[in-house]
Length: 432
Image (cartoon, rainbow, N blue to C red; front, side, top):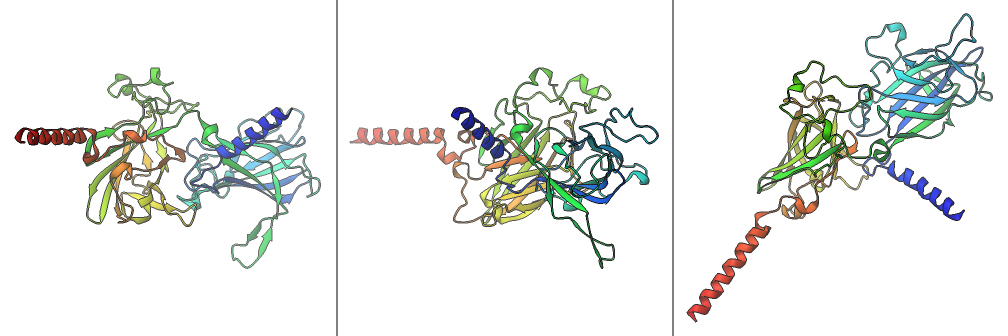
């Protein structure tokens, strides 16, 4: 019995730990339910989804939100979103509810719906930006009219068993908790109103729950060494090795080959690493007071492009970024005393879209960093990043012993030096 309790406690700690991101310790998605009015048999609520994650957004095909009703509630109507299934509403005569399912699944509406179906911050196809990238677009909302429910703060029952897909798995949602009612300001900002009742649900992301293997990898190169350190072999798993496509395959000319599948199954270009995304870090130049790095991101998935992409890099010299070319940059300060992490993302309407695999499936930029005389070195791989994230998921780095090394410390040069010393000693002995 003691072993079972210990095992349960360990699993609980593990599930909490894998949902913790040290580079974004406060990142989460918060669902806020504001009851705006009571009806004859229920209430009308505004549900707001705030993405407080600094660099993890919800990309197309968007979020899916689910829950279980505590009693026999139904959804009479919705504005700004819709339930994917109506369910069995055969017991209703006259007015038929929008959804009668015990556990409804809600999705955002697509852009361009009629105005009478729209709500503020809705209708973006479920796409929600990261808070660090664009706070104004890091929100989604809809209105729902609930029936066969409580009609007061004491009789209403909170929904339970919340689930969030964004768009795939990885999010774990806690229970709904009643919080102080939300305060609203009128348009003229002279009067305050408040919700009749408010409850929150917090959802956190875990890459461990999202997928078994990484979704990206990193390769390195430098001006001082001709060797290119590639991504590790099968860095993202080789389960798609038999279904990959060579870059010169005729199948790529088939119409509709780039159309995404409903299950989001990838069509990868055949590579040794089999990753959908590769990030390449090249140490380009070394000046007296500065050094220069080139970053290239390549998409190897023929069925997916990436809108609102983001790249997070951890490196000690990011506290002295002088200039970033063709990418937007924002320092991330999860711990105010340490400035070693930054987020790169595309310039709006210029390169904020990473196209699918092919001739246009890559983007690149350069950054100029000022040297810190006390720490800067090109030895022992110092010039390469400690962590790299693409779209919020950590990428696999090569093993440290494979990093490009300085020629002065290379085994070949050491061998040549030892040979020269031996030759000189032999010559001296001969002359003696």
